[in-house]
Image (cartoon, rainbow, N blue to C red; front, side, top):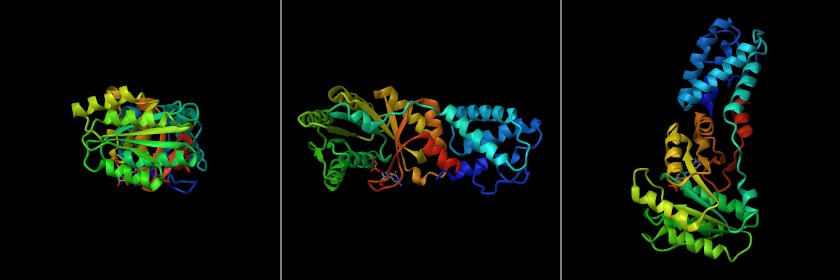
Length: 308
Ligand code: GDP
């Protein structure tokens, strides 16, 4: 996880007393040379960040803040350069990626039925994430209803119904090609008769340029009045996650994200780009294909993996 970003920043080394060489790839190792080299370090750092999927404006911001911190500090001592650098990276990333978090389970405890609509491009892991969240709510004693509102893609209803069966939660479904908003309406109606219930609405994984599907998504929102709309994003899409976030936000308004396939993401920069550029929270991250591979996101979780 995040090997590339770690390597680019020179954080993957265990050795706390790095040698001062300029071409071994680690920015941390470059600290300790004369302060006029800081500009060069900033330029190298920016390139490293971009190569690790950090979007250009975010890479700019990070390198500026970080270099200012390092310039202010006396980091000439051989022994603690790496530690000082790590600390500077930590505080810099905390600064630029600070976003007010959303606790899904806590929110759900305050309203019933609690309705969450899931949107996202095909293949990003939306269906799998819904199943993971459904199981999580079920374990916490909630009555979970999944609305099979992806009536568009062949096999989508069967896919979500199978998940429902495995987890043991109710799936409300109509026939393929039916009105997805009507499915979401029925699911909310069903759940409203039951205390401590949660409705999770699956929607068609659309391409951004399909106008009908965008209109359909708006209709589901209008009919089901979700408490939250979450966008699933595949970490492997790199900085394209920013384009997707913008498009879906413009179409229906997004409250937060689930970033999937983090387990396969060697780069690690997209999380930082997303938080820094959109200022919306990541609620969960997908760390694998089984139901339990879901982690509640926190910036500390991310930084600990990056820096330790
Ligand atoms: P959807 O089209 O957005 O509903 O995507 P699916 O839920 O069908 O997932 C697409 C593929 O990604 C499936 O093979 C999933 O098992 C896989 N997948 C989903 N989430 C994760 C994750 O967090 N890690 C990994 N490694 N694979 C995932």
